[in-house]
Amino acid sequence: MKIVIIGMTKCDKDRESRERDIENITKRSNIELKKYDPTAIVALPSLDYWQEALSCYQNGAYMASALMCRCATEWVVYCAITRRENIPKNFTGGTIKIDFAFVDKKWGDILAFAKEYGIINGKLENKINKIREKGNYVAHHGPIIDKSYQNFSKNIKIKADWIGKKDCLQIINHTIEIINTVLKNLAEISE
Image 1 (cartoon, helix red, strand yellow):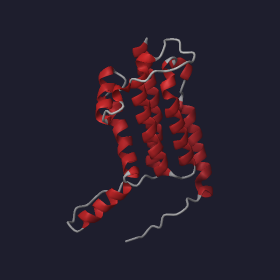
Image 2: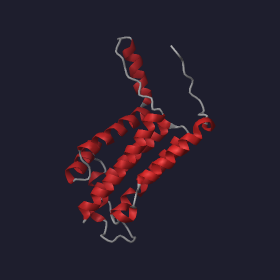
Image 3: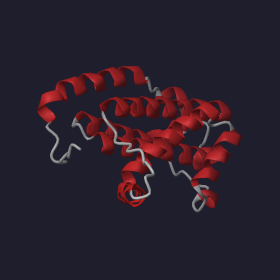
Image 4: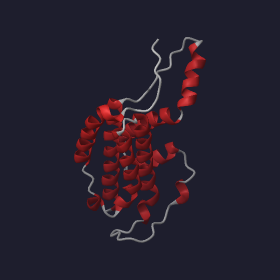
């Protein structure tokens, strides 16, 4: 059995390759906030998380990047349902009211409402759930590892779901697709 010691990521060796990946991703991301105005305001925090995910990726911090992608996707869906009815058609600034009915809702209820309302569909829901699954692995890594130790004596195999470069790129691409689709669908509903 090979033991891997986790330590500081060597950012120099593959950094240029990751920077090219980011350039390609941002070229393809095609976020046109003005196109989705007045609904685009809901995406701004999501885009901050997505940019943070890109920074983490650039530095080889793939698990941190996956966690930021989870935050971005959850935020855009949550904001789409809590702020959608209170955004003026020609938003030019001001205060946005929050629909607090969703504050204590479970994620499954929020997702179900977003699906019912037409903000997401089944295909997008699957992508969101996969990103959440990867993010959960990162956020709850300790209990997952302990469960694998606990089950080791019972010969039950627990799949390690470590996030590498390839997985991380897929998560980043799915995240921006989710943000764009939620914005597009929200803009169509608001018309």
